[in-house]
Amino acid sequence: MSDERGGRGRGGKSGDKAKGEARPRGGFFRRRRVCKFCADKIDYINYKDVRLLMPFIPERGKIQPRRISGTCALHQRKLQTAIARARQLALIPYVTD
Amino acid sequence: MSQNRDYELVYIVSPETSEQDITDLHTQIEQIVQRFQGTIEKSENWGRRKLAYEIGHHREGTYVVETIRGSGDLMKEIDRRLRVIDSVIRHLIVRVDEDLRVADRHRDARKATQARRRTARGLPPEPAVGERRGERDADDEDDRLEGVEVQR
Image (cartoon, rainbow over all chains, first blue to last red; front, side, top):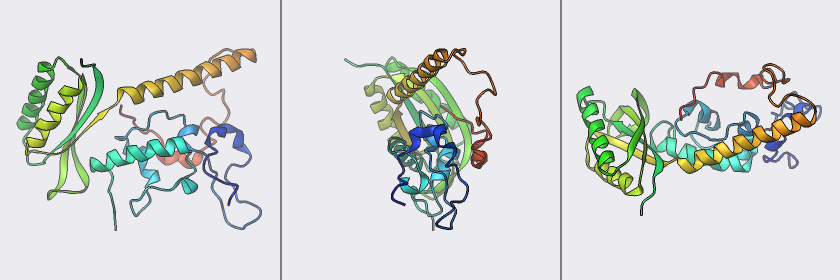
């Protein structure tokens, strides 16, 4: 797990080989970890774009940590403010239970 | 001295408010903007939307988004006014010029590097449509986000 930190996003297309697919060892399926915003070249994370933000908000309503989503540090920070704004506007819940 | 900057104002009007009152509210804001020598660049009404959580017993609200160019004093005044108006259940003012400028710069830089690298390889600076491998099929797991409308 330790070699798979979140901040590898900038690699972008270079990681084609490691893309998805089950790992031979370890047994379970591990997602490919690229920062979605780097890969899709999204420069401005818009707080009004709920469809963009929604995948980073699991059921509970908390923000998904970088170690799971694979978002790079820069974009996670921007994502954080975007989500905070969207929450203020009731586009995204603060908590759901 | 006050500089002109770009702001985004989003406000949620309570669902009981009539169309007329919403347009009145808009003209009210327009007047404030004019008084402070600002301009409204864009104004859109998203219509009724379900709120993600209750705000003061409301479950729905009408969203209005305005892009305003003006000074900080102007936005301060708008903020103060919106706080007072009861039909506005929530509002948010965000300064956007700086972030958009940074985003533009990033995009331009990326385009420039791409063009430079491509010309170095003897290719035309712009990639032709469908030339790049995996532009669409590489990330099939992101299909749910297809056709996302980005509103700026």
